[in-house]
Image (cartoon, rainbow, N blue to C red; front, side, top):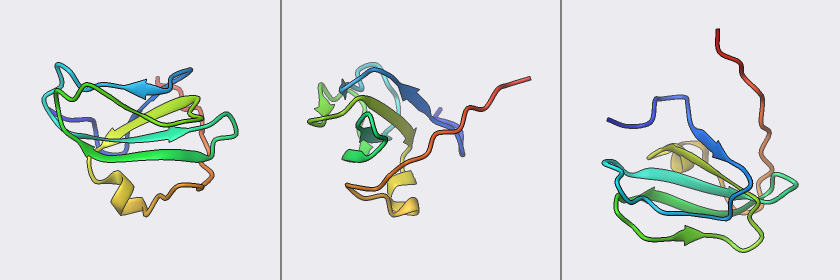
Length: 86
């Protein structure tokens, strides 16, 4: 199993993550309070103890490959849209 294509998980407030008990790699984007990217971890493997970024306020967990596909870099400004489910 993996995160669904086009989906992800935003955790707030949060400055670091681990991937214990996960079965697949994920891309992780760390953003500050202004939604500016302050850290990136591409394809973080399962069972890793720690990834974090100085100044992070939230983490965004995405399917592996999203960082490369979107060419996201440190300093990019992200926009978050609230999507409600039926």
